[in-house]
Length: 186
Image (cartoon, rainbow, N blue to C red; front, side, top):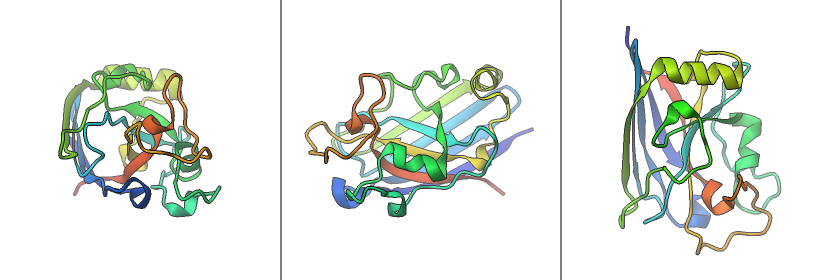
């Protein structure tokens, strides 16, 4: 049995960062693999872009963040501000999503035009087992998740109020630049 999911990814924080990052993600779930394709346009150029799906472990339907989530009114929706509507970071779209090792340098890097394409076949059982270990269920519930694409150049001056440091990575790495609701395709 095959299930397909699509997310139309729209800009977030574009007024501040100066680009309107957008694209599409498709997730095709078969018996033994999850095929992921993400293509992004107009992202900050020559920048590594963390990308993940976020959600609520208890199964609540996640929604995308909007500027309404800018609680400290600094003009940016940072990673912690997304959590109220989107939940927590769950699965990274890096070189090994099934390991669910979020902080690393193995994410796509945009080209000089702000474009990148990510494509990966993930062993579904391995991902489900790790997901169950971390979140208590092996059901990915993709249609209850949202995708985020993160990352701005270190040269972009961010207000001190922007939060989102993860390990050795600062808010430049974790600042959301685009988001989309994952929906089951007809």
